Amino acid sequence: MPDIQSYDIVVIGSGEGGKYVAWNLAARGKQVVVVERQYIGGSCPNIACLPSKNFIHGAKVAHYHQRAKEFGIVGGSSWHVDMALVRERKRRMVEGLREVHVNNYKRSGAELLMGEARFTAPKTVEVSLPQGGTRTLTGEAVVINTGTRAQLPAIEGLATAAPMTHVEALELDQLPAHLLVLGGGPVGLEFAQTYRRFGSQVTLVEKASRLLPSEDPDVSAEIEQLFKDEGIEVLLDTTVRKVAGRSGSGVKLEAVTGAQARTLEGTHLLVAVGRAPNTERLGLEAAGIARTAQGFVQVDERLETTVPGVFAVGDCANSPFFTHVSFDDFRIVRDNLIGAGAPHVKTDRLVPWCLFTDPELARIGLNETQARERNIEYRLARLPMAGVLRTRALAETRGFMKVLVGQQDDRILGFTAVGTSVGEVLAPIQLAMSAALPYTSLRDLILTHPTITEGLVYLFAAVPPR
Image (cartoon, rainbow, N blue to C red; front, side, top):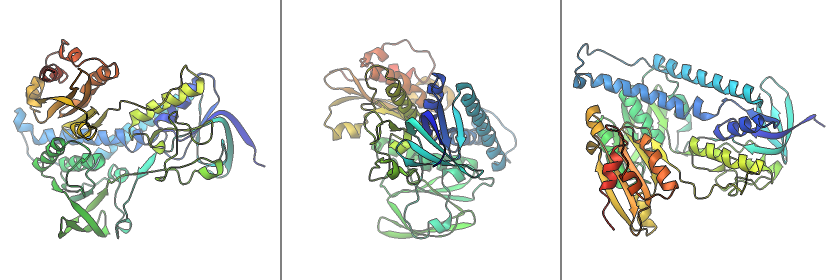
């Protein structure tokens, strides 16, 4: 029999939800161990959110350099992006974040154990250690936080072509001459614009009839026009049938647009078409933990699995794929573990999200498409970003804001914006919606001039009367 080490809480995966469970409960005196296979802190600070935004900001600097004369800055026209230096800047940031996480473990008292965990029984896991050997751990409670990974579609020749995912795209030390991007969702859009601004020729391939098909058509059209204006080739209603070559040395896509066959050639291929849960190697069956048909850990409204005392948080539990949602998952599990008042549940969460193209796309609540599908009557107000005076000072007038307000009351049903820094505008909208405040509470605020948030005053002043 293996030597079993007992803890109050065993956390599998050190992503957002898992690490905060560990830090918070260890600081409360609980014995907590976190098992992490590779990335201390999870995907967000290592290979996803923050590294990609590091790249995006660098691309914005390059874009401003291209627009220098517009701002009265004249000089030499010869310039290029050194991807090795771009990568080094990103790596320095990631290393700094890793140190922050290690220090947080030390301060909280939670144990960080590098290795790969696999259930051998309910609430018991065996950890394969990188230096060899194993440790067996058991906990009064177990929290699964193993995240997701980029998914490769079943296309002939795709795997052999060794395409990049977002992970490899953040590690390039040479600029792709021609980047082919498969997928017109958030990841594909952010990387397409970033590499175009760095200097690559970029072709974006999307099988749907428009970009971001879950958003309103006017939003899709705005992003599509932005990309075309920046010189990105956008191919919609296009399905890739076959891939040949190898990403990095030359790749060819056999595709169909509508009914027309076409061949696309590039130097590099990035695939961004969805996520798959990291659950198949966890041995969930040995613990009696059920999975959904898609492979996610099955949880109830308290994020508890089919085994009492075992929870799952974040992407692997099929929560919305956002770091801020995983953080809220932590709060749900924390409150249920410590018995803080009424059971804390995940239902009816108001989740904001932001696409970090430049300009940004930000939304919270219903869009027009969803409201119509649910037969919800609404009043619509719309404001071009040029009507927000701050954008004129910045020379960033592209886009619009729009808001849906209840037809029979003054509740805010949803807000969507495409424009510079609109992600920063979500918070006051979310606060008003969470508190069930009428839209007039924002309309009548005295907001600082000139800021982007000031645009809310003019947007809500345009809401039609009941």
